[in-house]
Image (cartoon, rainbow, N blue to C red):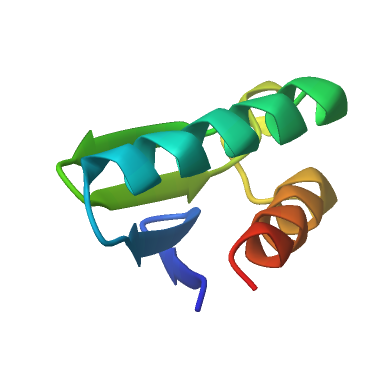
Length: 77
């Protein structure tokens, strides 16, 4: 579930292992590129933490962030 933390939409996803986490990041990267909206994220072994906010809108949460979050959620269903 996405949460608003420090002015960003944030969620941490947990996978079986590093390979699954990295594959997820690759799929998210393709989505982000298509939407021209790129996440701030980190990976630690089987966990991927994603922060979404819009840089050109003063680092605020916008509809672009919600749209990408929804698309990312579809990947893990």
